[in-house]
Length: 276
Image (cartoon, rainbow, N blue to C red):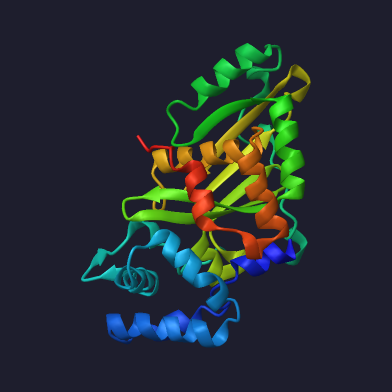
């Protein structure tokens, strides 16, 4: 895991670097951000170019991306919806709450609705229950969930490429308790463990004895559309539920040999996913 964490630390921990830049002109602010990254972070030269090349087609676009991060509002309008909340870290947990709790089905649903139902009936009720809500909803078999948890233990952190109009944006995922937390890589690089999630998938196991796991996903509409949130959920399924040698190899490389990890190989594995 330490190797994976090092792989992700491309930006310095101190967000004041970006706050100080707000008083400068757009181009000079972006250039200074890059120069300071090079000077303050030993992993910049090793990984930043790879990330930039995977997402962008020119140096000008990279500078523009940095500009959107440090100055998301320009002339009264958002420069990029994806980064509107980037500089706002989530509230730090108190020490006694540092462990992520196991989320319970009773917190969102009355158990009597499904207590006497079979797996097929529960699945129908679950999907119907969420039809009018701005969330993702799906069901897994116990076998799928077992595969997911086994791979999550071995690969608790990973990157997923999200298709965007200008290319791909990398989204970091991390498993904790019965949840999977997703955050834009740039947000994690700025805020580390305090980076705000753009999507959280929770797997409820209360009906496991009936052969079904209930999944619910809540997403930040300021960062993701419903289609983009579903795309990330589909990519998670591709890498963590199913058996595919190429995808398993990418998980292994990212976790155990990050120096050999290639972003373009990751993109090729998911490039057939289309947002609709």
